[in-house]
Image 1: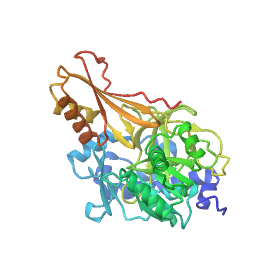
Image 2 (image 1 turned 90 degrees about the horizontal axis):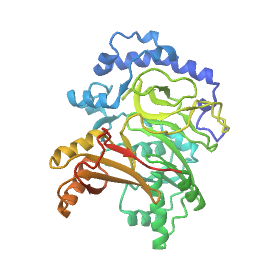
Image 3 (image 1 turned 180 degrees about the horizontal axis):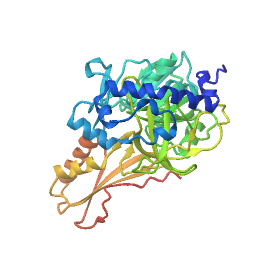
Image 4 (image 1 turned 60 degrees about the vertical axis):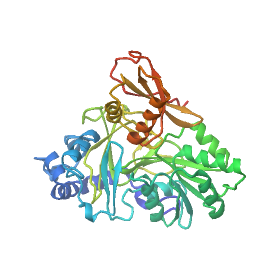
Length: 412
């Protein structure tokens, strides 16, 4: 096996891979139904032994995150959709929504090691992990995946920029993991302070968009940057390689593209909603609808990996969107409205400034005092877990079109 690949699974004949995945799927479904009553009810009447092809899989119902949230609220903590008891999990997380997830005892429960390997991380590398470890699993996804390779991890988390710069200058990590825009923040701050962050030459990023302009800037500063597509429930779904032609689907998932709001596969080459089935023994997912849009990239990657490739993130099938690595849901905007009943319509507008996400809540208000803005800022931070600007507008000035989140980011 070439040192370029994590293992020989990545270069299998595609048909061998397909046969292997669907040979293992019936047993995975059987174990899932046996251990997780939520899945047993969701897949009621399904014969696991019959699910041996993509056509048969497409007949199963899609579970979408809003439904998962409803099940969890009705039957805490996991709605019956986890195969591990809370007391047997390694960690318990709360992601925006809120949706609760367990971390199983597996050494690389989110399957990120091969993705980091494709980004050039190797045994013995010191990695500065600058993504949140607080409540959400993002920090631990990258942390555990790096450790699975044999890397040493600095748990930087988010914030405390100057302290992180001091740590980087002293410990000299060769790699960065986290969101791409925070890497720019760190490098800019290091330059401003006259501190040496040049040890970082490799970066694996996720949780926020990586526009080509930002990638080019970071590469111009000596950092090779590759990205992955991941979710809290599924871990790493697909990742870039050195070929920089789309994202290669992870070996341990089955990815489908369906017409948004349905479970029906799209025609070849069409954009559809990403639906994923995994093989996790602790937190199994059978046709989880991510709400993200993408399309299959034809052919095999020039890097030699033979799995399906997708074009990457191509928007949302709903209004839920990701800001600075955190999902913001229309239900959260509704919660803000309930806390401030004196306001009229609300609209959250997401834009980009200086290669960073900017979130602005536009609120119809008869009042314009500064304390109104301050109170709203605090509510947005509390509910959305992301800081946002406040713009008060006149009553009746926001469109009556049902849209509460408007993603206006331009990555061109």
